Structure formats: structure tokens, C-alpha cells
Amino acid sequence: MNSLIKELLSAGTFALTSCFLAFGLSWLVLYQLDFSYGRWHDVGGIGNAIEKFGPQNYYRSGFADTTKEQREQLFQQISYSVHHDGNGLESIVYKVPGHPTQTLLTEDEVIHLNDVAHLINKVEWMLVISAVIWLLVMFYYYKARLKPPSVLYQCMALLILMALFVVVLIVVGPTKAFSQMHEWVFPPGNPWFFYYQQSLMSTMMWAPVLFGWIAAQWAVFTLVFFACIQYLSSRFLRYINQSVTKAVD
Image (cartoon, rainbow, N blue to C red):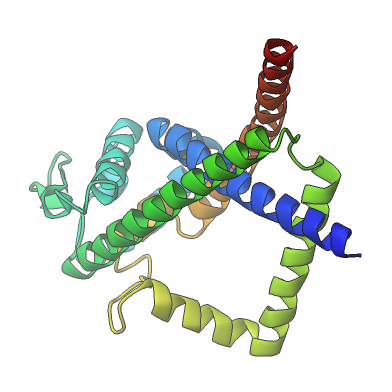
């Protein structure tokens, strides 16, 4: 029994750090691809949402007349800013014929996106720490001449952790947990919810629909990177151990 617990703890540590590593690598790739905004604009209904809600905005005009290329550029500027401490958010503008040049974001949206930028900075540090732990675990396996835990044990460990999370969620209550999560993530009192009629940011992202598409794509990329990490780490340790054995012989 103790042996099984040790196996699951080892597998859980390796699986979690591998997941975080895959998670971070997927994020880097998606960031370079602008999270496929142009594709979701066309096939995810975002373009139609802009046509519908753009003219209803209380504070800005003419956004429905922007081109797809303009919207892609605006999204790219927002993405770049939130990945660089929120720099430049206030200066993002758009212009269409018959309307003056207008800033895209309201003051509340800038505040929210700065909060998002700070959150991304924290997540980046978490990913760095996870990568260091993963390397330390790999070094331990190398020194102990061990193979990485089996994928079966890793999946078992992850399922146990997911089950514990679900139990806690049920006990605490989904609504309370959601509210508490927002209090942990964003400063109290700062805006984070915007109606389409108040926010071109929400309109051009058709929030939360775009986030759903991104999450699905992110999950696929993470699974691919996780599988690659499993394969490469196993091959690497096997190669190193065989090389050491040959050198000793």
C-alpha cells in the first residue's frame, strides 16, 4: 500500500509539472498565433456578433464598419499589451470613414486589462516554478536510474486530484467558489464584467464565446505537448541510462 502511495505521489508530481509545462508551451504557441482570432472571427460567429452589437455601443461609433484586418490588429494590440504589463492599452485606436479616430477601450476596460496583465505575470512565474520542479524531478530520475512514472499511474493521480477538486467545489458551492476565485484573481471593486452595449472589447471578442474557442484549442495543444513531453522524457532518460551503463561496463 505504501509503495502504491509513493508511486502515485511521484506520478502526480511528474504529471502536474508536465501539465503545467505543456500548458505554458501551448500558451506561447497560441500567443504567436494571436490565439487564432482571425479564424474564430469567421467560423466562430464573432464577425456576426460585431455586426449586431457594434452599432448598439453607448460610447463608441462606427465599429461595425471596421474590417476584419482592423479587428485582427486591434486584438493583436490588446494581446501584446496584456503580455507586456498593460503598456499601450490607452493608445489603442480605430478609425472608419465618417467617424473621428476613437480609442477602443474605456477607462474601466483599461483597468480590467491591467488586472489581466498582472495575472499573466503571476501565471508566468508559476510556470517557471513548475518547469524548475519538472527539471528537478527529471534529475532525480536520472540520478536514481529510474524511468518516468507510467502514463497509467499519472492518469490515476490526476483523476484523484480532479475528484478532490470536484468534492471541494460541491462542498463550497460553485457560485461561492466562482466569486471567491474572482476575489483572489482580481482586486476587489475593480470592474471585470461588461455588457456588449458598454464595451467594444467584449463585442470584438464576443465574450465569453471567444474564450471557449481558445480554451478548446488550448486543451488540444496542451494534450499534444503533454504527450510529447512524456515521449521525449522517457526516451531521454533511457538514452542517458544506457550511455551510463555502457560507460561503466
